[in-house]
Length: 320
Image (cartoon, rainbow, N blue to C red):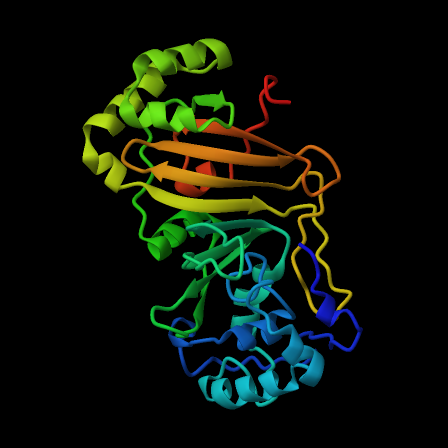
């Protein structure tokens, strides 16, 4: 991500957690506390990794350059200190600090909807979860105009999938297959053939690209003949920031896709069928436009939704 030029003068302040932390139990449950964009910017020291609360299209860089974030911190402390989750200086409690910990780290980001491509495009995402080295939390957009956000820990690793599915309202991923994968070129005709149940096209695709043609044709037949399968589709966007180094030279954190191991994908999930359609984007060189795109149709074996969403499918030989 490019850094806005109007915040390049070096006047931006570095926002870090204060070293002293209070440990008294909060008086208000974390799940009931509403955070503003500005609250989360101060508490996280910049953008959240998924950039749901604060990203390049929502941060008021002019405000930061003129006034810093002290006004935001004071306002946050005044409003939230009665909850017990921050003290009078805006320092987070241990409970809140633990919940915030993964949210600005280079881990997996898993979100519902899709990432906006411009300031004019409406952000349809409601949940942005970050999985980082055994910790996982999510930021959830609250309903209503400018209603703010909640911070939701996903619990222990064994319940991440249940917690995430509860936030996004998604059924478990069926496990009727054996983990097969069909890799495809980035051709819109592939999706069209699946939607219309074009068995001849799909068998020809598998003959050229490999993969289980019986599984693919079975799914296509279900999708084309049963409207409930299509109605149950869910969309997600996933990015793997592991190995990336986030920008902090301006005094606050902005996530960067600057690792050769970075990858991202847009995903369509059909939970009742246990099928996940992945539109993969993988770097092929150092430039921002050096990207390889391809499709990966995954037939879930015994994995969870999060397993399928964070699964990497290597580019096929016919794409490289």
